[in-house]
Length: 411
Ligand SMILES: Cc1ncc(COP(=O)(O)O)c(C=O)c1O
Image 1 (cartoon, rainbow, N blue to C red):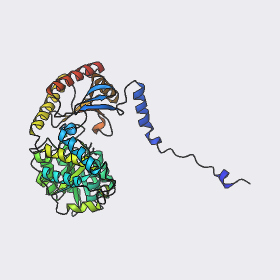
Image 2: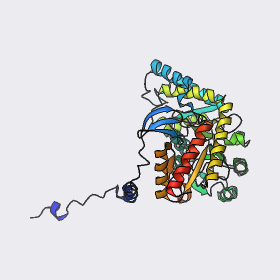
Image 3: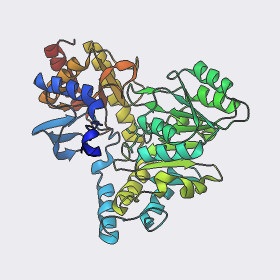
Image 4: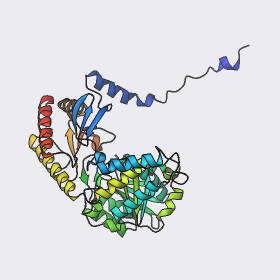
């Protein structure tokens, strides 16, 4: 007699990775064309904030977001070493259990000083800061109104919460107002914006947007990941530069860019802010950062408060590179330099990858960015400048772009 087993043979398993086949094929086609893998670069040795041995070559770094060059600052390194000696390599615990050390408190004090705000809460990354704060603030029945070009961590924060999510057209003040008008009366509203949008390096019209949000009774969260340290009179970001920082309810930031370490944070003047430490899952249910990272971050943040000269030089670099690339005939993400990010628009992924590789062979590292990270299906070579790039290095970089652009046929 046949068994039930043979009548109903075990079904073939559905391969859950099959949905990624188009991505695998695109990557294989790119590599078959002989291009180096742009997403598998190895930094064999880092020589300074602006130079490294990459895939065996001496390379100028123009894609690290190390805006203020703090990674090799002697005080930042010394503070980290001392904390490692005194407190060990890691915390092995959550901030709300055994993971709050002296330096976690100190880095939060440094953030409160830097932003002149009442509260600061440090997360393990900027990604987790957005994930945690957005999903915790906006719950069932609330509305999140956000720019459609928001960073993945903002979108993921929306997904993780139960709020209604309403995107509006990138940097479009009228579109924001239209969406706000449609939100039911009495509902909780969180408008989520970024100071600098990292793909094209453009700045948000925060002055108008924050005013509109407030007129409609919304709370405002601004992610200043790409502006901390060099935009605004005290380096507090675009909200400071445009005179609306006092109207912003929550500022999100990261240590992985201007601060030169790793970590994320939220600062706020909201009187009930501290309750977030008890209810925000990406804060509670993960290990706190190592004390060495916290001590380095605190030292870096305090130095950034006095970084006026470096800021001025970074802006000079940004203007020189933007003008130089335009003069060479490249199409750029912004008409004028608005931040330390300059995006060079490529005709397609294949040309973009070829140009990326040609630049690497010249001795220049930039970021290759493509959909879904980029807006409007664009392929971009994103350049991020550092205050430690010399004027001569910027000239060298322009020469590299000129040769690579001509070799690939983009200019
Ligand atoms: C706008 C924005 N927010 C948040 C993050 C996440 O920061 P982190 O690297 O600390 O996770 C990034 C990083 O790229 C970002 O660009």
